[in-house]
Length: 171
Image (cartoon, rainbow, N blue to C red; front, side, top):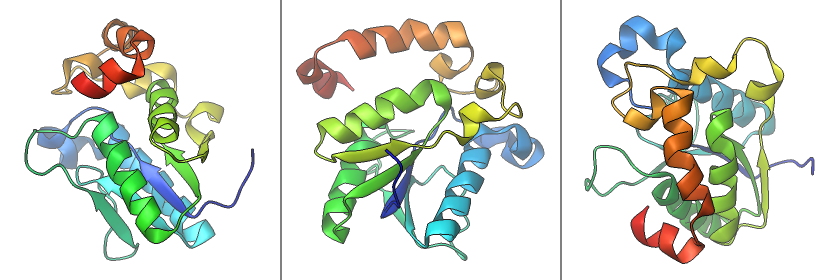
Protein backbone atom coordinates (compact mmCIF):
# COMPACT_ATOMS: atom_id res chain seq x y z
CA UNK A 1 0.00 0.00 0.00
CA UNK A 2 1.54 3.29 -1.11
CA UNK A 3 -0.09 6.32 0.36
CA UNK A 4 0.26 9.95 1.22
CA UNK A 5 0.48 9.87 5.02
CA UNK A 6 -1.28 12.27 7.38
CA UNK A 7 1.52 11.93 9.92
CA UNK A 8 4.76 10.12 10.66
CA UNK A 9 5.44 8.19 13.87
CA UNK A 10 9.03 7.58 14.97
CA UNK A 11 9.98 4.77 17.36
CA UNK A 12 13.29 4.96 19.23
CA UNK A 13 15.72 2.07 19.11
CA UNK A 14 18.31 1.93 21.89
CA UNK A 15 19.35 4.63 24.31
CA UNK A 16 22.64 6.40 23.63
CA UNK A 17 22.25 9.70 25.51
CA UNK A 18 25.71 9.75 27.08
CA UNK A 19 27.73 9.70 23.85
CA UNK A 20 25.21 11.40 21.59
CA UNK A 21 27.20 14.51 20.64
CA UNK A 22 30.36 12.59 19.85
CA UNK A 23 28.72 9.63 18.11
CA UNK A 24 25.60 11.19 16.61
CA UNK A 25 26.16 9.78 13.11
CA UNK A 26 26.41 6.27 14.59
CA UNK A 27 23.29 6.84 16.68
CA UNK A 28 20.26 5.02 15.27
CA UNK A 29 17.82 7.55 16.72
CA UNK A 30 19.66 10.43 15.04
CA UNK A 31 19.24 8.74 11.64
CA UNK A 32 15.57 8.01 12.29
CA UNK A 33 15.02 11.67 13.22
CA UNK A 34 16.57 12.80 9.93
CA UNK A 35 14.36 10.36 8.00
CA UNK A 36 11.23 11.57 9.82
CA UNK A 37 12.18 15.16 9.05
CA UNK A 38 12.62 14.28 5.37
CA UNK A 39 9.15 12.69 5.26
CA UNK A 40 7.58 15.58 7.20
CA UNK A 41 9.03 18.06 4.73
CA UNK A 42 8.14 15.97 1.66
CA UNK A 43 4.50 15.41 2.65
CA UNK A 44 4.04 18.57 4.80
CA UNK A 45 2.96 16.50 7.80
CA UNK A 46 3.60 16.40 11.55
CA UNK A 47 5.91 14.06 13.42
CA UNK A 48 4.88 12.04 16.50
CA UNK A 49 7.88 10.90 18.52
CA UNK A 50 9.16 10.14 22.00
CA UNK A 51 11.31 12.94 23.37
CA UNK A 52 14.55 10.96 22.98
CA UNK A 53 14.41 11.20 19.17
CA UNK A 54 16.45 14.31 18.27
CA UNK A 55 13.98 15.96 15.86
CA UNK A 56 14.59 19.65 15.10
CA UNK A 57 11.54 21.22 16.76
CA UNK A 58 12.47 24.65 15.41
CA UNK A 59 11.88 23.48 11.81
CA UNK A 60 9.18 20.80 12.11
CA UNK A 61 5.78 20.44 13.74
CA UNK A 62 6.34 17.78 16.38
CA UNK A 63 3.89 16.09 18.73
CA UNK A 64 5.59 14.28 21.59
CA UNK A 65 4.51 10.90 22.93
CA UNK A 66 4.35 11.47 26.67
CA UNK A 67 5.99 9.06 29.08
CA UNK A 68 4.47 10.66 32.20
CA UNK A 69 7.88 10.45 33.86
CA UNK A 70 7.28 6.85 34.86
CA UNK A 71 10.27 5.24 33.13
CA UNK A 72 13.69 6.06 31.82
CA UNK A 73 12.49 5.25 28.30
CA UNK A 74 9.03 4.89 26.84
CA UNK A 75 8.01 1.45 25.58
CA UNK A 76 6.98 0.61 22.02
CA UNK A 77 3.40 0.04 23.15
CA UNK A 78 3.30 3.35 25.05
CA UNK A 79 4.55 5.25 21.98
CA UNK A 80 1.91 3.47 19.87
CA UNK A 81 -0.84 4.33 22.38
CA UNK A 82 0.16 7.99 22.39
CA UNK A 83 0.45 8.05 18.59
CA UNK A 84 -3.03 6.56 18.19
CA UNK A 85 -4.47 9.06 20.67
CA UNK A 86 -2.81 11.98 18.85
CA UNK A 87 -3.79 10.61 15.41
CA UNK A 88 -7.44 10.37 16.44
CA UNK A 89 -7.32 13.88 17.90
CA UNK A 90 -5.80 15.23 14.66
CA UNK A 91 -8.16 13.23 12.42
CA UNK A 92 -5.36 11.23 10.81
CA UNK A 93 -6.18 8.02 9.00
CA UNK A 94 -2.87 7.19 7.30
CA UNK A 95 0.37 6.85 9.26
CA UNK A 96 3.95 6.32 8.10
CA UNK A 97 6.21 4.52 10.58
CA UNK A 98 9.93 5.23 10.92
CA UNK A 99 11.63 2.53 12.97
CA UNK A 100 14.77 0.41 12.98
CA UNK A 101 14.20 -2.54 10.62
CA UNK A 102 14.30 -5.17 13.40
CA UNK A 103 11.71 -3.16 15.36
CA UNK A 104 9.37 -2.03 12.58
CA UNK A 105 7.13 -5.11 12.47
CA UNK A 106 6.13 -4.77 16.12
CA UNK A 107 5.69 -1.00 15.86
CA UNK A 108 3.29 -1.39 12.95
CA UNK A 109 1.46 -4.28 14.63
CA UNK A 110 0.94 -2.28 17.83
CA UNK A 111 -0.48 0.71 15.93
CA UNK A 112 -2.86 -1.53 14.00
CA UNK A 113 -3.98 -3.44 17.09
CA UNK A 114 -4.72 -0.13 18.80
CA UNK A 115 -7.05 0.96 16.01
CA UNK A 116 -5.12 2.58 13.16
CA UNK A 117 -6.01 0.76 9.97
CA UNK A 118 -3.69 2.39 7.44
CA UNK A 119 -0.15 1.99 8.72
CA UNK A 120 2.78 1.81 6.34
CA UNK A 121 6.41 1.17 7.12
CA UNK A 122 9.20 3.20 5.58
CA UNK A 123 11.53 0.96 3.59
CA UNK A 124 14.38 3.45 3.34
CA UNK A 125 16.54 1.82 6.02
CA UNK A 126 15.93 -1.66 4.58
CA UNK A 127 16.64 -0.66 0.99
CA UNK A 128 19.99 1.10 1.35
CA UNK A 129 23.40 -0.42 1.96
CA UNK A 130 24.29 2.50 4.19
CA UNK A 131 22.62 0.71 7.11
CA UNK A 132 23.72 -2.94 7.35
CA UNK A 133 21.83 -5.12 9.89
CA UNK A 134 24.55 -4.70 12.54
CA UNK A 135 24.26 -0.90 12.39
CA UNK A 136 21.14 -0.93 14.56
CA UNK A 137 22.87 -2.51 17.57
CA UNK A 138 25.47 -1.00 19.87
CA UNK A 139 27.28 -2.19 22.96
CA UNK A 140 26.90 1.41 24.23
CA UNK A 141 23.13 1.14 24.46
CA UNK A 142 21.72 1.31 27.98
CA UNK A 143 18.99 -1.12 26.86
CA UNK A 144 20.50 -4.63 26.97
CA UNK A 145 18.21 -5.93 24.20
CA UNK A 146 19.55 -3.41 21.65
CA UNK A 147 23.21 -4.27 22.19
CA UNK A 148 23.29 -7.13 19.68
CA UNK A 149 21.11 -8.96 17.18
CA UNK A 150 21.15 -12.09 19.35
CA UNK A 151 20.00 -10.21 22.46
CA UNK A 152 17.33 -8.48 20.39
CA UNK A 153 15.80 -11.75 19.22
CA UNK A 154 16.10 -13.24 22.72
CA UNK A 155 13.64 -10.58 23.87
CA UNK A 156 11.69 -10.02 20.63
CA UNK A 157 10.58 -13.59 19.89
CA UNK A 158 8.62 -13.98 23.15
CA UNK A 159 7.07 -10.50 22.65
CA UNK A 160 5.90 -11.45 19.16
CA UNK A 161 4.56 -14.84 20.21
CA UNK A 162 2.64 -13.85 23.32
CA UNK A 163 -1.08 -13.18 23.09
CA UNK A 164 -2.05 -9.52 22.66
CA UNK A 165 -3.82 -9.32 26.03
CA UNK A 166 -0.66 -10.47 27.83
CA UNK A 167 1.63 -8.23 25.77
CA UNK A 168 -0.54 -5.20 26.65
CA UNK A 169 -0.39 -6.11 30.31
CA UNK A 170 3.41 -6.48 30.61
CA UNK A 171 4.79 -4.20 27.86
